[in-house]
Length: 337
Image (spheres, rainbow, N blue to C red):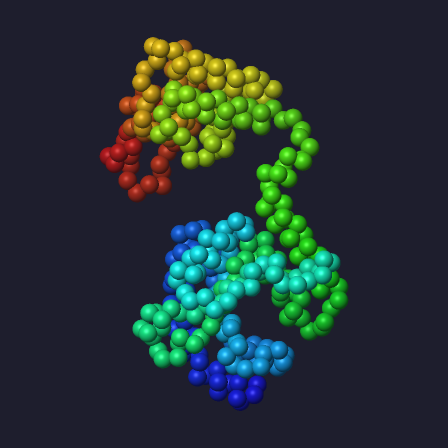
């Protein structure tokens, strides 16, 4: 590589390491808390030299990706929040948002949002002189964009040949990614156009969610028992019913019988006060565990706890979950023995 490039790079390399340390610590913590993927890199001098030989960059101060990082988000809906975080932590130099790059309608290529920034004056003042002039790049990519770029980059751009077929295939895959992103962005609207096929299990689970949401809305069940995931709650109730209804053709009727009986019992004036602790599914287990109700717990594995005993009166459990991997043995109430 040219000696001039190597000399200039060696002078800025310590600053790049300092920028990498600060930005990495700042954004990695944020991404871990938000459920995003974060990774970064300092551009190698060999890669920089090849880039400068391309003739598109006219001066050293225009180089904006000697240090670069990527934040991978689930969908584009998360992007505004990420940009607000970047603005709060760094000094924005510029940004190229997705969709702003001009391209023909039949062209499909890399088009991820790129945010360019420097350290704030306060952060720069605490570090080596000159660091305030280092511009770095933050790419904000969706999971599908990241997967496409990661898979195709080495296959297409690091080969020994310029291959039309590989570039064509990479563009076709990018088109598929764009279509997926578009569908996800309008998921609720697009799903309406999907032809529906009747499936008893889905209808039964939807009925479970609807009936229990009604009980909470009507004040019969405390809002404290609202599940974190209604989908998981419905799956669990359906699994419970399936454990005592081996005939899959009869499961929908068994679910309906449980829902009617449960709602009738808790809506009557003589019903006991609704528990405020535990979980909604524990409440269902307590109901099914009564000897005079539909269903049975004999073939269902239950995570026993003090709530099951004190709030839902479930004393005897036929199949109890075993905490065999726990460091301490637990008693029937879930307390260390």
